[in-house]
Amino acid sequence: DAGVIQSPRHEVTEMGQEVTLRCKPISGHDYLFWYRQTMMRGLELLIYFNNNVPIDDSGMPEDRFSAKMPNASFSTLKIQPSEPRDSAVYFCASSWGVGTPNTEAFFGQGTRLTVV
Amino acid sequence: AQKVTQAQTEISVVEKEDVTLDCVYETRDTTYYLFWYKQPPSGELVFLIRRNSFDEQNEISGRYSWNFQKSTSSFNFTITASQVVDSAVYFCALSEGGLGNEKLTFGTGTRLTIIP
Image (tube, rainbow over all chains, first blue to last red; front, side):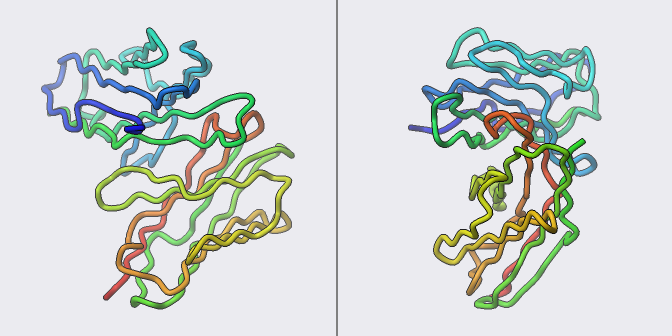
């Protein structure tokens, strides 16, 4: 398996623009997570899905952030409008769920977002 | 609320020395999971180990070993005979209840530098 695939790897955008980050989880995994890493706040969970359904979005910073999972093999994290404080590395991760012995999350390589 | 503390911000050791990374956690749950992840300079997060709260056996995997002590709420990680490739940021993480993959709370990480 190719692992969790995120795109783009790097994104530079101007303040106010819409940004869409994409994630393809490992095939067969039924959990998908979006994390954000910054120097100030470290690694924090934004939202996670189980079987394509959002389960907990309490980590989403504000209404400018939205996430979708239209099918088992694709998810997006959208920021509209973007602000400089959104600059961070965004990680997507996926894992197996009920009935499997190992449910640790496997992370993608991250998308480094810079908002200028 | 759950919390993970990695008091060591940065550690430098000379190659071949042993090094221990400390992790102290706080949780009110009786069922929880502890993890270690490695983040090399390339940026991805690499899963190293998962431990559930009912399994206090120490684990050894090659040069890596983990010491889980519920009495002191600690889950320390030791690298024996360190190598330059071990240079990375190491994160300890905690997940309460469930399957162990939901809502990982990460520590702030320890940056380990192995000096050749």
